[in-house]
Amino acid sequence: MKNKWKRKFFAIYTGQFFSLLTSAAVQFSIIWWLTDTTGGSPLVLTLAGLAGFLPQALLGPVAGTITDRYSRKMMMILSDLTVASVTFALFVSMYFFEPSIQLVLLVLILRSIATAFHMPAMQASIPLMAPEEHLTKVAGWGQTVSSISNIAGPAVGMSLLAASSIEWVLLVDVFGAMIASSILLFIHIPKVQREATISTTGILAEMKEGYEALVKHPVLLKLTFVMAVVAVLYIPLGTYFPLITRNHFERGVVEAGVVEVVFAVGLIVGGSLLGVLGDRFDKVKTMAAGMMLMGIALSISGLLSPSLFYIFVVLAGLVGLSGPLFSGPFYAFIQTEIEPQLLGRVFGFVTSLSLLAVPIGYALAGVLIKLAGVAALFSIMGVLIVINGIAAMKSK
Image 1 (tube, rainbow, N blue to C red):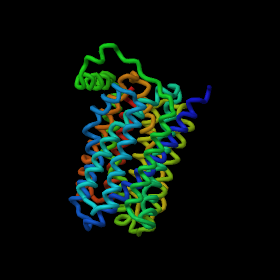
Image 2 (cartoon, helix red, strand yellow):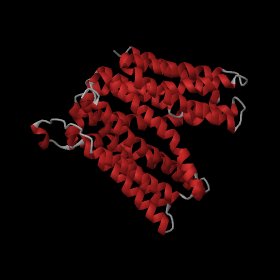
Image 3 (cartoon, rainbow, N blue to C red):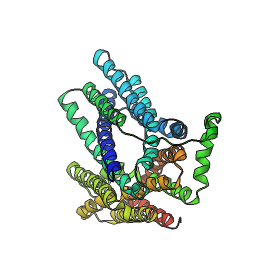
Image 4 (spheres, rainbow, N blue to C red):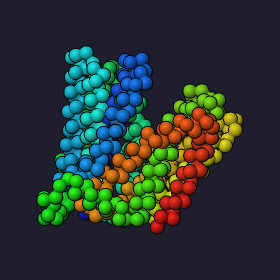
């Protein structure tokens, strides 16, 4: 019985691996298909990007509230089955009829809506199965699975596209979602005891309860804003790694690929370290250390001379390694501090805030690059992330 919870998570994350891997393959394949079909139309690619994240960002609080109302296990299964159904519909359409860009965008929207329900349901289920003292370790396992899937997914999509066509990539994703939902059928996730008055309250009243649970916890509220600011600063930088490699270090596509691989390896190493050692350290201090490591690595990257490219490669690995060190403990902190019956709503608000920060980050990065250059962007963002790390440390 001692390791029964570990076996549960091994099964769950095995299913999640196949689902995330095939979803990443489909996401890459669809973007490539849209690029190829439209000749790289900026409008269509922008719409595709918005379709992929905006529904999830806007629906987060509502999805979290519904997740808290019903079985979290069933919400995850329904989310996976929704992804499978809409992706299969796109497969049929592309196989038998003329492919439609409008239909592809609609499918991206529906997949994003399903993800809006799956994420809070998954995160809110973890403390129902794992001992509180091991929540950071579980977060590390999840970070590792997510990193490997997101890294390998585009490679899988590219290989399948080279060997066949986009329709068969879509069909592989259907099987991935089916595997994940089938495994969940055999996993027991305890149900949360709810108050007797809950059936008489409306969605808006329950959303307010989740919001109040967040704002009435001063430490968590501060950390949530810190994480949102870090999302503004950090998320766009992944897009600009090739740009700094080309424009500042004056290297080519091979070197840009090396930077991406080292960054990806760093992500996996960071998640693995958290999965092994995460429970031994204070969650907030681990978050702060991760932010400061990332900020220092980025600051130095922007100050390097073009001849010191291979030092930049090492620093890119440290940037990747630091990501799970602050995101994993943050999720574990929420799971520790918030009552189980409110977790879905709180995660819905937190996820929406982070996602809505993404376009702000890209706009800010674009302005800074135009004014000061890409190297200066890395240094400025690095200093700001260090400041956020200090703020996280002082939040308690």
